[in-house]
Image (cartoon, rainbow, N blue to C red):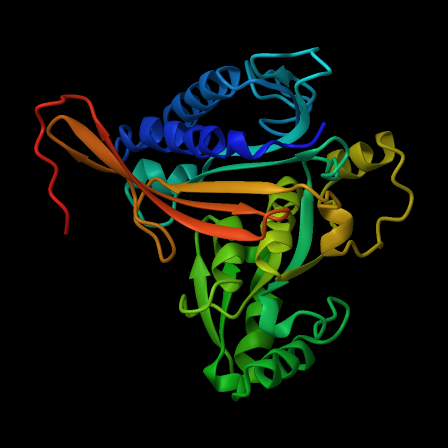
Length: 327
C-alpha cells in the first residue's frame, strides 16, 4: 500500500521528537546518551503512526541495539496489510559528537518508501560523490578528482576556485584532500555529518557544491532518498576497510564490490518521503530552541510523489498561557 498524504505530519513529528530529545542533551559530552534518547523518542513516535513499518536502515544489523534495529517492525499497525506497508531508514541523531559538544550540524533524520524501495546497505563504509541538480549527470566517481571538479564548475558556470567541497576530516582522506587542493577548489572539512552535507549540496544558497569521500553506507542510502526528492545525484561504491567488513559483504552475497550504485539504485522507490529536523544550528536547519513553556523546531520535509519540499517551522507550547514571540 502506498504512503498516504495524511501521514505527512506524522513523519515530520517523528523527526521532531528525536531532535527535541537529543537537543536536551546538547553539550553534556555524552554522545551515547544523546543517541539513546533520540532513538527512544523516534521509536515512540513511530509506534504512534498507523503504519505497518519495517526498519531497513537503522541502529545496526548485528549489534544489540534495543530498538530501531534493521529488520525490526514498527508502527501502530504492524502486520496489518491494509495499513501503509513501508520500509524505513532512520538516523535518529546524525552527528552524535556534534550534539555532545554543542557544535553545529546535528540533525535527526527519517526516510521511508514503499516496500523494497530502499537498498539494504551493510553497515560498512561507502565511497560517495554527491552533487545537486545543476551537476546531475555530469559526474563520474571513477574519474580523477580534478576532472569531476571541472565538470561541476562548468555546470555552475564558474571556475573550480569558486567551488566549495565538503570532506570528512579523516586520515583516509589525505590523498583526496590533496587532490582537491591541487585542483584549486575550496574545502570545508567536517568532523561528522556527511548526510547533512549531502543535502546541503543539493540546496542552492548553502555554499556547498559537492561532497567527496568515504562514509557510512547506510547514510549513503538515506542521502540517496533525499537526492531523489531534491533532484540531485549520488554515486557510491561499497568500500570495506577491514577484514570484518569484507566478511560482512561476503555474508550478504555481494560479489561485485567494485559496483557503482546510482541514486536510483540506492533509493529506487516511487513513493519516497524524507524528513530532517535540526538538533543544533546548521547551514540548512536551525537547531531546537527552548523557551519557557515550549520549544521551536526547524524541519525539512520532502515527498517525491507529490514533488514538494517544505521547510516546517513548529512551535510547541507546553503551557497554553505562554506568549509566543516571533522573530
